[in-house]
Length: 226
Image (cartoon, rainbow, N blue to C red; front, side, top):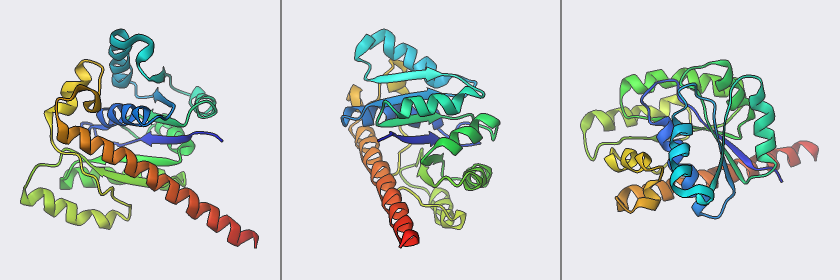
């Protein structure tokens, strides 16, 4: 059985895309899954984080990582999926060819979204691209303030996008960025219990969401063949 492929995608810069990818990768590895990460973002932030992690932990990093772009993306994703339970792709922050290839290969597009009207509007192009590639998407509310009328008003508008929204919300916590400095995740540093709980809960929720999608697809195929 090939591994599940998840593309973390968002057109708008500053959405926390790479931060989400790093923390989720470690959380899934800690759950016992064989995890590979792929960085196709020209900025290479996930690769720099992994380099720090590898320098600190060596072979105990718990992840396999590669960085590439262009026509090799599809083939490399397939190779990694044949050897791992989860392949997590950090895609470019624009609707470039690489972003399209990532979504085409993915079983799920994981889309971080900050709770503001501007972020919601800027998310539509990546949702359109996922729809073009027939890839289901899941929105993840990121950098949620503890309270605020503007944030809640933006959240109330999200159903208009017509895409499922993860129940788990990630708070606006400095611990997420602080952990990455040392090549770690919040689930490893112990710096913030709340941040660790959020990431662990989201990791479990995303996998359950994929399983539901797989069951739905299987059920549809059985009905069509009956």
